[in-house]
Image (tube, rainbow, N blue to C red; front, side, top):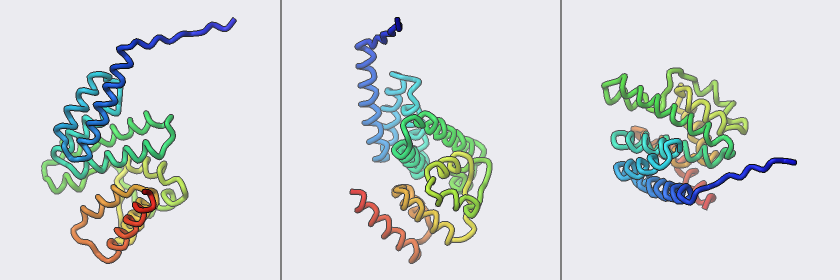
Length: 210
């Protein structure tokens, strides 16, 4: 006879889980509106309900970063949500751990550099660097999400020409990283004709996705 195992779920657990999700949803909306102080408090409440939930921990850390580095915090959050959406559910925990490592690298860069300009250059950088030419084929072979995830978590992408950067932006657009491509463009000191074309491609992609 096969022994059956009954798992008991207490009503309080269900209520706590529902409350946590509500807090996380409210926190996410506040975060995307750049209200990082409010987002921090909401994620903090959710975290104390379930300290093992990495969603709350990521939101808590990024909200704290957002108070001083808005663009960088939003970019990491955008990367995280895209990875979760485009990857299979069984990879969620692995992705979350990778994002936490990315945040850790960011914090180390802040701690080790006192010059603001140096800090901005080190956003999303790991200890190693990789040229875009070396990873371009990986990102273009139909496994963009896996390749991009690995690079973002471990390396700094170095572009040797403007054309390489434009190619990277178009890959972001092609793979629906529209917010991230926009943020890269917003960080540019000026916009040339090629960037305007890419902005048009972003606009077209947004219409297609509606």
